[in-house]
Amino acid sequence: MPFFGFRKVRHKNGSEASSIKAKVGKQLLFALIGTFVAAIGVRLIVVSGLGADAISTLVLGILQHVSLKFGTISMLFNGIVLVIIFFYDRKMIGFGSLINSFGLGFCLNLLDWLGLLHQIPKGMEYPSIILGSIVFGIGTGIYLLADAGSAAYESLMILIKRGLHSTVKTARILLDATFFLTGFLLGGHIGFGTVIVLLIMGPSLEVTLNQLPKRKFFRVRAVK
Image (cartoon, rainbow, N blue to C red; front, side, top):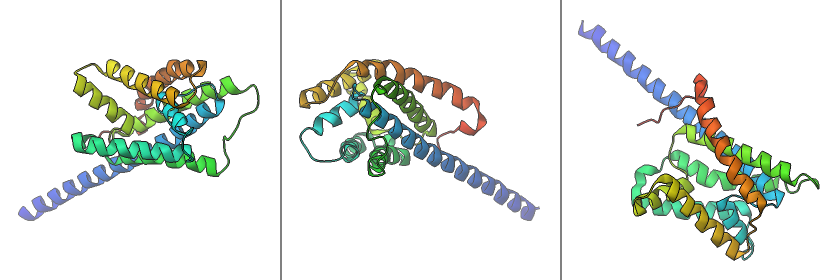
């Protein structure tokens, strides 16, 4: 009897291990896909020349003063934020945080190196920023579904929320406003396209988070 009991326990542990591996694999897949899709969205927004999201506005402002690539500045910024978050609350950081924070910049540089989305045909500015906002929201949603750690920007928002004892909405508004203003003062462009990003990206993200989990493949739980 002990023999059979032992074998049953081993079988159970083996099943649990396989389940954990499957979840981690799915988290890794979603983090990678989400980050790459988000990068395409960011690129479409930036090449429109009509304005951008908060962090892209900051990066575009910094680009007026340094001779680095967009993706490189993005990686440097996210790296600095992750170091701050690590000392503040390292539990917020997971492998997905590293993938998103550095992978987004890497993908942007890769698109640049491949010569993709450097420019768009004349008259396609608004379609580009609208499509980019939708794609950015979808990519961010897929990444969030991975549930593998907070991205740098979201971690910074949580830090502000805790520091000011405010709501998530208030913290996000303050963070976005700070980045927009800083980017603008550095030379970044804020236009009507910025409003388009703010109006479309959120709903696109919400639809992604609400609809994709209805399909079994997209249901992922964080591995504790």
